[in-house]
Image 1 (tube, helix red, strand yellow):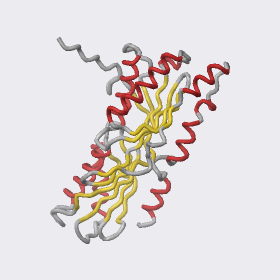
Image 2 (cartoon, rainbow, N blue to C red; image 1 turned 45 degrees about the vertical axis):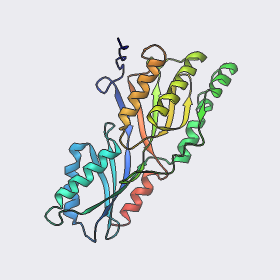
Image 3 (cartoon, rainbow, N blue to C red; image 1 turned 90 degrees about the vertical axis):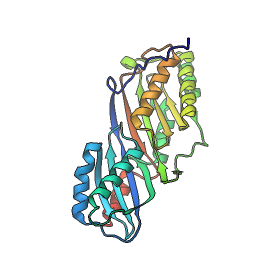
Image 4 (tube, rainbow, N blue to C red; image 1 turned 30 degrees about the vertical axis):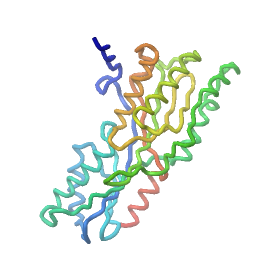
Length: 270
């Protein structure tokens, strides 16, 4: 008989998330059209049940609309596009039955940009030094960086441009320190392998004794929640299905632009 698939330890129901998930979305219209302000106001209420909150919006020109939105962890970038496009098309149906082209542009944005966040994660061993120099050296050697994983360039699909970059932080269970080199290497290897299987672009692992930071780029069909939980369960599997992590995690978005830059750009068009 085939071997039974291990049951997930970390699930949506038993694991909590701290999060800051923001996106800049640009939609292209088929022809020149001015969207009434009242429609934008109705759109904000319509997308809320989808866990898509519109923070800023503007008409860039006669053909393009731009939005800054926040989401909850179970919402993927593809869900954001479907929610905003679908509801806006519905609200505009009396004015124009079909207003959108197929193309869109959705970019992950965060409190800081790629370069600043990359530098922060790279310095984790120095920010959390070990008392024993030998252990400190061991931790430093376990860091991971893939220069070829370009998280600045959007990925292209048949329907648009996507940039889905996540910063994930996972803490050890009970916040305990772990300096067992064999265990740490197994966790590191499992993270690299599971990201490759899902075709995530893993740029950096900032690993220290009691927590780790991950910087990775994902396809737009994956929700931040699904990415984080899969990694946590794979880490547990690597050490014999033990709950090595807290039943919580942090996930945030980031990209080449920070939130303030996008917010100012949108407001300048209103």
